[in-house]
Each structure stands twice: as structure tokens, then as C-alpha cells.
Figure 1 (cartoon, rainbow, N blue to C red):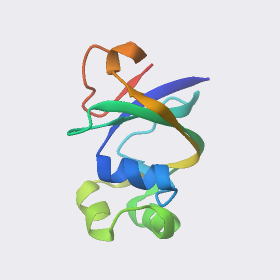
Figure 2 (cartoon, one colour; figure 1 turned 90 degrees about the vertical axis):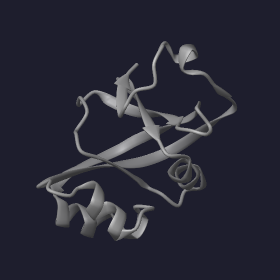
Figure 3 (cartoon, rainbow, N blue to C red; figure 1 turned 120 degrees about the vertical axis):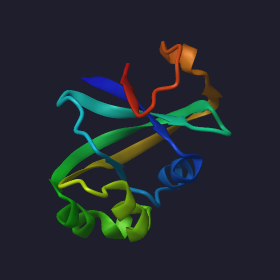
Length: 122
């Protein structure tokens, strides 16, 4: 199995860590062998703060993904609709166990020399 690092806004990182956000939304579906998301909190944090297992992937029409994830998506419907504007398909990674690192680490410590715009396989 493999891991991918996702750049996630701190407000959503906090919701993932607290368990309030059970889905991470993306416009793409990762490789089938990815089972873990490594969480990079974007500015002002700019650190890798932990990781979370992927328990399922939902890929469907935007409206259908909203219906399935809305109670635990951790975002407003307005934000969801803006993110998927002009898109036919949405992807939601169902999040499992979260492991928050005792001390956040730098991107170089996970083998990256750049901040990924969206994601990077590591």
C-alpha cells in the first residue's frame, strides 16, 4: 500500500483531527493502492501534522456525493458547491483512524522539497 500527502487548510485539518470531518473532498481519485493520507497543514502552519487512513472512496455525481457525506463532511454546502462548480463528478475519501504526530514535521522529512499544490505520492 502507499501514501499520498494532501495540502489541507488548517481549519479542515482541525476538524479532521477532532473527528468532526470524516470525508476529504477532491476532484480526483488517487491510485487504488493508496490507503493513507499524510496531512500537510497549509499556511500559516506549513507543517506535516499527522496522517489518516482511508477506509473508502466515494466517486459519483456531485449531488450524490453531497447526499452521502453531508452529515460528516465538515464543510458547508456552499463551500462544497463552489469547490465542484462546473464538475460532474466528485470524490470523497472516507477518513478512518487519525494519527497526530507528537511534533509536526517538515516536508523534507517526508521526502519533499516543495509544497504540493494539491497532492503528492510519497
